[in-house]
Image 1: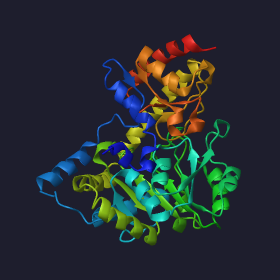
Image 2 (image 1 turned 90 degrees about the horizontal axis):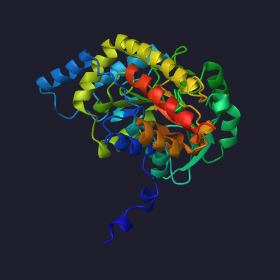
Image 3 (image 1 turned 90 degrees about the vertical axis):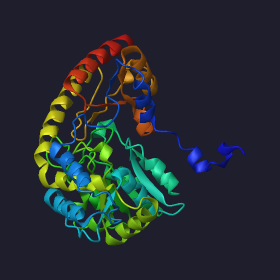
Image 4 (image 1 turned 60 degrees about the vertical axis):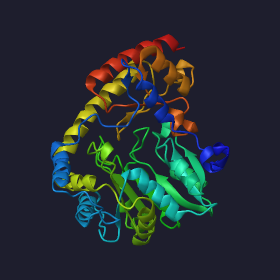
Length: 389
């Protein structure tokens, strides 16, 4: 039997993640500096780790309810009201998932049928398009522009909507660009959407990491709450990537459908992580504030470093990435990253990993130490000097 022929053509035709390639390469290089993976270099706050350890000591190692512990969902509801001013019934409108990525997959499988269209603004998180394809949907790509600071423009959205449009991804604060959607821009997007039967998947995993005011959720608009699914989690803000815990908040019917798939595919999110997350939501606001201040310092360092190296870089105001243009070097994004890694031992990610319109850009993550960023910027400056035209 030829096993490769047995694999679904849909799966076979999905390219592997452009991020993991560089992650795997750098693991083989002892002297390399990685600015490639979007993972906090901070440890999970001690009180959160302690809560997880205590839950193990108490023998809390069994299944949780499918949708998550009630105590955790209550804390999530309080968090959403405190941070976004949006009220959710923890019994019917919140689902605890294995990271935000599972929530994305569940939402699409719950919503779309073959032939439905899913609008995806790009550059954006690598999982949106493959998950849409795996769910049988047709991805419709909106190419975001640097001159608009990678914000979604209402006229772009209007032009992308058709009678088959079922879902819109709203990926802000944005990975990989660090772009945000200020209220005046979000107001215009709401005007486009408020009378349309389109579900918005608002990926707010970086909502806590903003540097010019507070994040505004589209779910906070009265006309938008029932048609918006908010996806968030603990990986980025709480430095809990390995705990694999996320959550979704939305209409009871959609949460019920997602929970049904979750029951069969996953059963429940990790019990230890859920106990730790309860503590995180209750007592870790100050830890988030401290990490965000440090990210902001590193953000300014990296913007300054790329600018001095002669690479044009708009100011990102969210997440922990910068997205400089490398067109002045005359080489492609993929070639730039490969040469930088081999010649200077610095790993960044080609912009094309996040969509074809990412050509001419690279993503660099500043969730790394100040010393690493400083040395990496020196190496990048030297590298760009060799290739700049």
